[in-house]
Length: 82
Image (cartoon, rainbow, N blue to C red):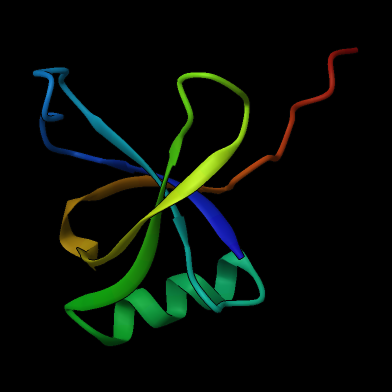
C-alpha cells in the first residue's frame, strides 16, 4: 500500500518539513502504524513524481524511523468538497 509520509525534519531543498511517497506491504493505515511501532526502522520503497508526467517511479528502498514522522495518510486519498 502507498502512503504519503510527512517527517518532522527539513527537506533536502531546505523546506521545514519533508514529505515522502512510500510503499509498504501493509494492507491498511492501521497495519502500517502497528508495524512502525514494533521496530525503530521499517524498510519502505520510496517513489518520486516524474517532472514530465503524473507518473511516479521508484527511487529504491529506504529505512524509515517512526520517531521523525508527523503525519501519515494513504497516498491518493482525496477529500470530497461539499
